[in-house]
Image (cartoon, rainbow, N blue to C red):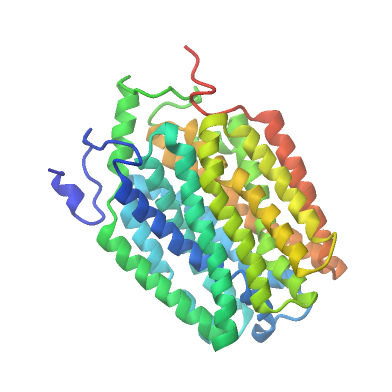
Length: 443
């Protein structure tokens, strides 16, 4: 029988070594958290098609790319901060409660988009979207890592990102058709409201808090009873490190951690380009919302689906080289956009960019989790996700300024591709392999 605390919603149970890790033994909860990631992905996917295209309705003048990118900046800033705050908070009140707070934060979004009179309403809506993503997505990812064994971590993170980013692609495609049938604002309103209510209800009813699994794993390592390969944990921090020390270690002090953080930042700079400027680029060249929705969907679906394979593959061949390849393949896809014209070519470029994301995105999370002690793994993931999602802020400001200064979108694409090439080189230079079987702790 489970402890009484485990049956009370939002209350973290006491540690019980009956909390066995492994995807198969925890399959129901693993899939439930994957479903939550699917819903969170739908929320962000709905903005990746029509919202930049209807910016004129909200008073954004043509060529005001910096102002246009403000909604990505607000999203990225809030989400980045909440990633770390949520991780810290979840160690105190549990993963499930933080996730449900994330869905409460999403409730104002559809109303702000439907009734907004200026672009600032959209900027505010994306503050709430950042709250939703920073709380709900972070907790769903952390929970599935809690439930998995170290040898399954690549597959687990690949599945997580598959669920989220396949939904990003589907959300963009569905909104494209919905906008054609009902109008952009009405389609966004009903889509966002339905997803928020359904996700919150299912989370409340079916999710269990996974903090006890993390605590059981922590005690297993601390007692020397861990049966898996011992990872190469940083020697600078013990098992019960403070949040500030974990943040500084992951951000600056450890070369492998910091290399992955910069890779995550550049990755999201690229995604901010593809979120806002890529649909505008296609629209300027004659594609309508439905066809843009298909291009966005290919990018998101390839990114999502292929992570099922790239995550599992990294459990066999390691994370580091796949991360490097991901940055460079993504750079190739970004450059491809500008080489030729036509729907078929842009669909191919979107597929290459999706493959690049699939090679690196989930494996960055798995790599950070590999070398984080169970006692502060959630904090380490929060610190990495802070730097990853602050890339939306850098991307929004940098790429918006570059596009606006020349009144052209092409320089923003070339700058993004250059940053990705350099970023892959930094990982090659500074990072070690993190998989505990391929690079175990020294005796």
